[in-house]
Length: 224
Image 1 (cartoon, rainbow, N blue to C red):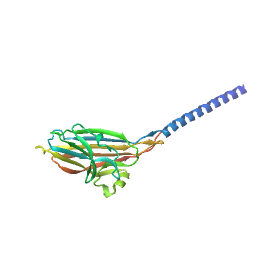
Image 2 (tube, rainbow, N blue to C red):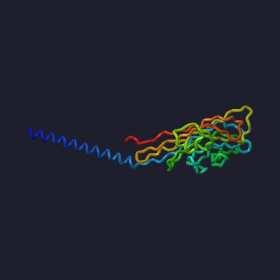
Image 3 (spheres, rainbow, N blue to C red):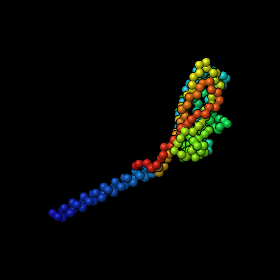
Image 4 (cartoon, rainbow, N blue to C red):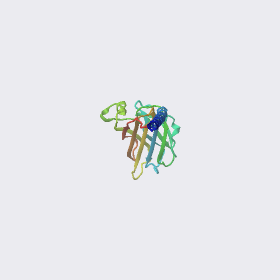
């Protein structure tokens, strides 16, 4: 009887050891898959400019907005001007006194609102925000500000070529850029977000400084 009990205990013990080893192997397999899996950082830029619809165009009208770039001003999206062509508008990356901006131009008799979501994968892992940057909190450098956890800075938009309406309205700029979030070796990188929510009188012509909000969602080790 004692020998039978001893054999039973050994069998149960061996079974527990086998199950434990199997569980460890499965865990290591999942860990290995997650460790080698890589997700590229993603760039997305949601562009909504309303209040343009119905405005008469005086020959050629131009609207310019900030473009996503790193702290050195290198574009991280829209390297090709052909990637962003809303209905009724032509698009290009244009040099301005403040730096590069996305320029929308139209020669139609009347303008249309601009609505365009776009996105692409990015191979670089670096802070990025909407530029040009005209001013930062405490006048720190753009590079230092981009490495911070966030804050409100000043960027710029541009309007020109519209016939001033009899009843002045507002043109609303709702811009949201988000980049980063790539995963490598189970470590998720930071997510950088910059937004502009500003209203400009429809009678405006020229460059208009506007506030932009910038914040960083910290990355870290992903749970298994």
